[in-house]
Image 1: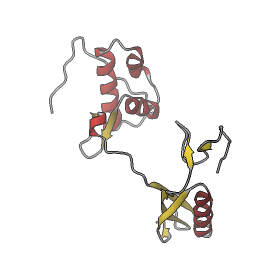
Image 2 (image 1 turned 120 degrees about the vertical axis):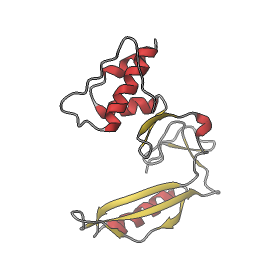
Image 3 (image 1 turned 90 degrees about the vertical axis):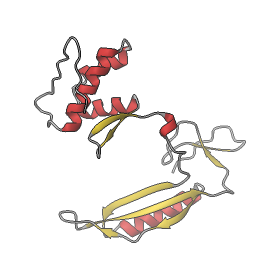
Image 4 (image 1 turned 45 degrees about the vertical axis):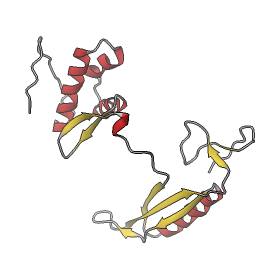
Amino acid sequence: MPILRLDPPIEISIPKRMRRTDKLLKARTLAAVLAHDSSDSPIKELQNIPDKEQLYQTLNKHHYCWNSQGKRWEKLTFEDADSPSEVVRIRIWTDSRYTKDIAEELISSLAAKGLRCVSKSTPYPCRKPNQLESRIYLDFLKNPESDIQPENGSAVLGAKHTKKGDINPQRTL
């Protein structure tokens, strides 16, 4: 791994309340390097972010992603990306007594919104100490005959939808 030497040297500080992991140390180093090399003010602000989750989100926003196998931050480009999947995947994780019922309610609710369930797993019990909980995985596809279209920027669940030709009627799940 090449050694990074900057002139003048950059001081990397990690607040005492943060657990010092490789990911955090390398995120702080990357933030310091980006701030040092850039005149862009949002990137300059990277070195002053005290919260590690906010730091990670900011690096992600600037197209850096943590490669846990390689133990490094990598710059991603849009050319690296696959096309978005047409499948909506949902994991339900709850009290084992209610998992199947919640899955059935979700399937019927999303069917009314134009999504068809194409895959439903059997309930998987969780390990200790969560052995009273279980998970079900659901996969949905949009029904071809459905005319419900999500508005730009809206999330799938709880989003406003418009019917083709309608003028912004509000429909939520």
